[in-house]
Image 1 (tube, rainbow, N blue to C red):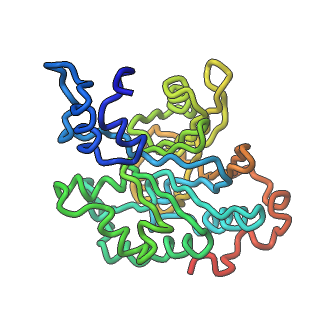
Image 2: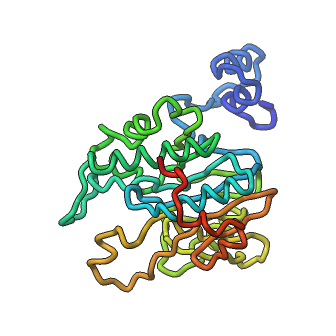
Length: 294
């Protein structure tokens, strides 16, 4: 492995051994030429993003709790129940953390205003799913950024998820998550006011099917090659609950709610034009809570 250019760090990872042990073994066997540099172990490598095996998932994003839509949340739970989905992926912005925002608001929430609803939502997820994966969105980044890292989002998430944090509730500091070798879920820093632009560009960059968030667009397209799906997932927000969206006038497009299901390797997109009678075969449950938000 050394002869092929592998560093001690890579060999240690492959054989699940301490890096220093591998480094010592390499040097004992004289495999390191004089003057050759070994990897500086004090410099981190950023390869810790979540990589999940292919499975069935409900995939959501952009709840912006406490400003999420109870109706859309309950729909995602009903779809999960109908199709036996036990795992949930949230691609960023689960929580708003508006109290940590820079912008002025006449109705800026306090942490007390948010924590009750955030805990209620997270506990609802843990009741209905065996596993919840959350990747970091720009809103989860707010608290650490605005306190210079003194207080971070995970500090509050640990409290709201309780003892399941790190077990059935997994929070990744990366803004992306890979499913199998074909799907990449992202909450990118890049943003376009035009639906489909960012997702198609990301397909071409990463050569995977992209499930894109952050822009609050909904759409399904192919990248320019025609090989990869470019999905804009929408979000689980309630547009009527946002002050800056309703009290300020901009040229930005309206927000479109939506979420997805990955089932047997196929992706299904649910949006405002979904025929819920068809999908649920239980029209009476679409707008009911049925204990979904506890």
